[in-house]
Image 1 (cartoon, rainbow, N blue to C red):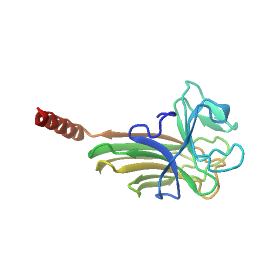
Image 2: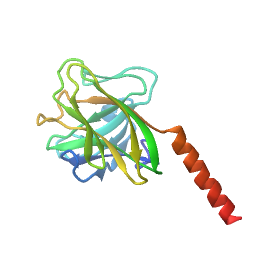
Image 3: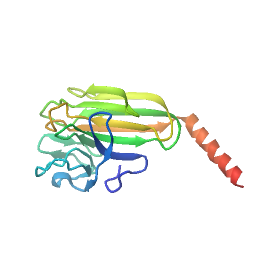
Image 4: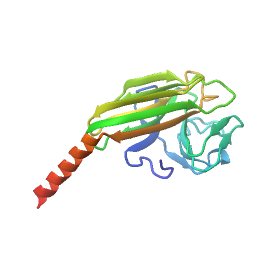
Length: 197
């Protein structure tokens, strides 16, 4: 995660107007959302003061950070919040190479008082792998997936039509190439090197 570079390698942070719609990058970075130790990216699509959603932020400290007295970010935790007018918060991974990848993710509710009505999604090139709620418990996903270079995997949080109130969602996600994929990449690099000699 980077709060100073978007995209950051294969990862990018942004929003869409509806699940699976066109993806737009968040354009404003922050080192301290709401004056707290939460760094990340905001869209600032709402003109009301303090309405910086949708956003993707991270608690980069070694201690718990609480926003608005009810939303609790554990150390290192990434959080997504959708907007007020059908703007979904999106973390996107764009495949740098082709192969088989292990995709694992857990979405969890960050608000300790209000129940979340948000829906969460994992999309491969716009097609859904996962659609779930996170109230009361977390939503987890794990699978192997064949992916072509340039494919996208989107981790999406919507507002379920209720705006951002109580709908801050934590995301933990990893995408790792399977050993066979690493071997193919290594063989391809070796082939390129031998061709250049």
